[in-house]
Each structure stands twice: as structure tokens, then as C-alpha cells.
Image (tube, rainbow, N blue to C red):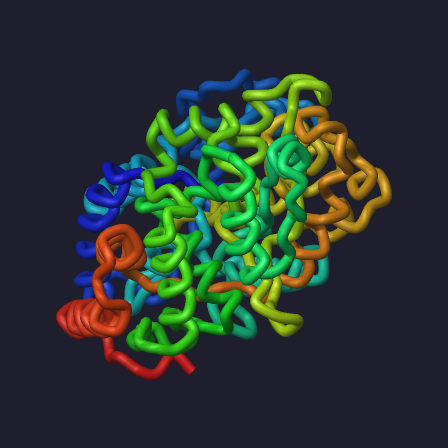
Length: 464
């Protein structure tokens, strides 16, 4: 699940800069997180949830997943030897800042922490490892349980190290206001060329809304759009953590930004912050004919806005493609990592794996949390594929989404990803919304981020 706002960017940029400087500048921290084994250190820990077995060992968890209290209660009711002690440490950037503060203090971190895939590199970069390598606790034995994209997102190019247990992902799809397309008798687009034409056709037939909204505060959504065009803009591997790759000055990126700049100039799209209340009101009011976004968006907004099949005008379709070679892509997702301050590292590793490790927890994550699973057992089940969603007009949406999740190969992010996001957000908004030159914009962005990487002590290499 992704959580993005300008406030989060500002907070995380400082966190990322601090960690990156420490990562490459030398430290007393070990290149591998220390293993601890104190089973009673959390005896007096304060928990939001009810502890069922008071005498059992406690493992502390920070997580913000919707409906997570049901996951915790299920775990605690089914385990007598260990209990989860859960607190919401904040959502996204707020949690990462709090975690950074515990790193500086050398205490106060939870045993297990929820992290978005894109946030993890900053906590394992260089000489300092603030996340435990779960490969040392048998996690590699569960590789086959998860989609390739999710697994690659927690291993960071390593063949043996695993830095978190995948939970959810955000397969890239298109939300379509079916009532708009039906009313104006316009074909739902399957390619980006058809997408532009659909916008023109809708306007010509009297539709007063916009084809979609290109998010001025968009971050990972643009990485997904670039990936569709075969453009990898970031490179980072835990196996060589002092090197990074950054390159926006490539044809695929230019093609994507030029496309959206053209749609903006033609007046076919809106260019507003997704995080604004006004934007979501427009989406719900039918002022956007489509919305190209991750699958988690249906739980984040659509589910709350439409309670019955009769109420909802929306259906999910595959995201438009450039051609038959367009890959399946993803936007967002998160996992459970074990921190270097875990009181009993082995126990924490086992709990992290087991929290969403059975049928009940996985199904609850989908139904109560709006998560899209990375667990192949559920992802491939007939029950899951045939599940209907009232807020999508009783559509079997997973028939569309599941193949995208399975086809996604994974993404790469930087140890200072939030700083990079802040820079790319400003650059892309200037290009798409204000008409800045694409060529000069991506060239300047590449130079800015490469220079920043060097200042933090990283060696810059090719993204290929």
C-alpha cells in the first residue's frame, strides 16, 4: 500500500539523506544486523491489542495495514508460545522518521516493522544494516510461495539475502467509469494511442469531464509508466551497496513524458495532486472517465465510496499498453522486516513470516485490508479469482489483476529514494503541467540526482 503526500516527501528526504550519509561514510554499525535472543525483554511492552496468553513471549510490531487488528488477534489466538504486541508506528513517512529516531537513539525500534518496498534500501545501504537478513533464518525456503516481483523487491539483487517478508503489491490497472463510456458510446481503450483517441471522442460527443488525472504529486506511478516503456531509471543492489544507477535521459522516459505533456496541452487530462480532496471528489462525481492506478486504489477509495453493485459506475480493465511487448508493472506494496534492535531475532523472523502465513490471514488482508496478495497460493485460487466486488458492480476484478501481479518482475529503488522522488516530482510537474522541454528536463534531473548520489559517497554506474 502506498501513502504519498508533500509532507511525507519533506520528512523522508531528511531521513534518506541522513541514512545515506551514514551508509557510505563509515560507522560502528556492523554490515549485518546483530542477532539477539532475549525472550523476556518485551515482557512489559505496551500493546494496542489484547494479549491472549499473558505469560508467553512478546514480539513487538509496527504496522498500519487496514484491518490489521484481525490479523494480530488471529495470530495470538492460534499461538500460545508467542504473542504479537502491535502498535501503529505511523503511516509511511511518519513511521520511517520514527524508526530513524530509534536508530539515532540506539533503542526504541520494534522487533518487526512494516516498510514499503521502495523505502527498504535506505535501511540496508552500505556498511550499516538496520534490517535483519532473513535468509539466515530460513526465509529462502519460502521463495516459491511469493510472486517473482514481490520476492525480487525484498532481496535487492541478492541470491541469498532476504530483507523482508512480502505482504502486498499494487498491480497497475485502469479504473473505468463505465457509465461515461456507455453513455457516449466510446470504446474502452486498450492501448495508449486508443487512450488519447478516447479522450478526444468523449469531448467531441459532449463529455465535459477529463479523460483522467495525471498526478502532479505522482511518484511510483511514473516509475510504473516508464517501466511499461521498458525504461529502468534506478538501479541498486544489496550485493554491491555502494553503487547506484540513475538515468532519466533515455528514450522510453522521454516518450512517456512527451505523451502526457501532449494530452495536457490538448486539454484532455487534469493535472492535480491525487492527495487533494478535490481530486477524489472529481473522481467520484464522474469528472474523470478513467484513472490509471494500482490495484490498492480500489480499497483506498472506491470501496469506501460505493457500497453496492448498483451504486458503482466503475470497472477495472488492464492498463493501456504501448504494444504487445509492454510488460506487466506494479505501483507500491509493502512487507514485514525484522529490525536490528529485535529483542529475539529468531522469534521475530518466525513471526514476520507467519503473520500473513495462512489462509485466514491472507483472505482477511484482502477482504478487511483491501490488500492485493503476493502469496501465490491465494493469488491462484479459484475462490480468489472468482471473488466479486460490489463496489465494482460485482465484477470479478481479480481475473484482470491477478495476471498482472504474476507477470510483474520487480522494481529497483535507491537508498535515498524519497529525495529522488521529491526531485522527480518537481521536474515532471514542470514538464507535463507547465510545458517545460522534455529533453532538458530529464537531462537536468539525471544530473541533479547523480550529483547528489556522489555527494553521499555512492559510485554512479549505468542502469543497464
